[in-house]
Image (cartoon, rainbow, N blue to C red; front, side):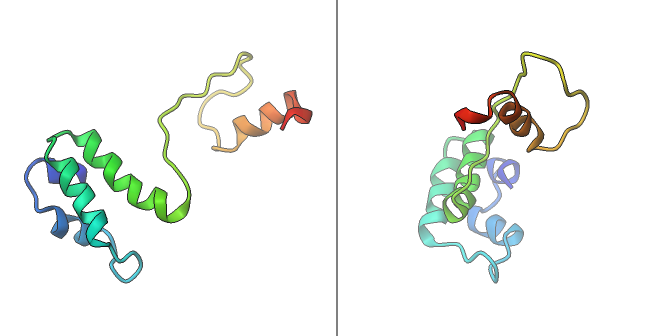
Length: 95
């Protein structure tokens, strides 16, 4: 969505094309926030504005933080919760 919007697609139409309005009815404020971000012509800014809609509604957040472990115990593709479980095994009382 962000890429299409930055390339000139209509913000409201694009959001409503990809976000089911029966499930997530976008508010004028949410559309305005993405429209403001689109003025920057920066895909990351638009993407962050779109993500913020879902972050605010679900009390969650997206992150690009890379987790590095001091001891290489996991290789390849791992489930998202696995590093956290490893950390609590190392120091369970602190959590």
